[in-house]
Length: 68
Image 1 (cartoon, rainbow, N blue to C red):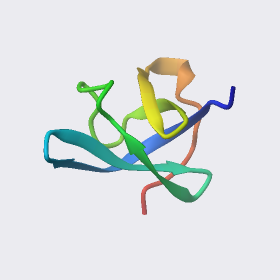
Image 2: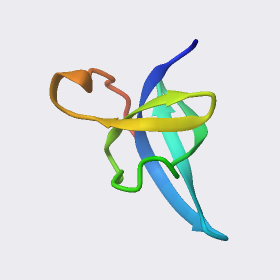
Image 3: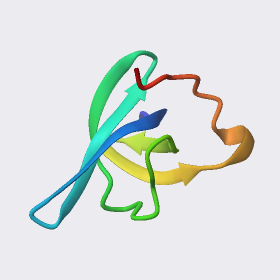
């Protein structure tokens, strides 16, 4: 199983679906945000198979990605 941490740079809602772009080591990845309705711009999320599974807090957010 491949998991990674990324920072939310963009959020979109379309046709009842919530998705966005997550910055991971300088690359942007499209992910589903349906499972984390509490996620906001700038939050760090744990992602697997294009789906954000949870919002990380505190020391779990070691990803240093920027959303520039």
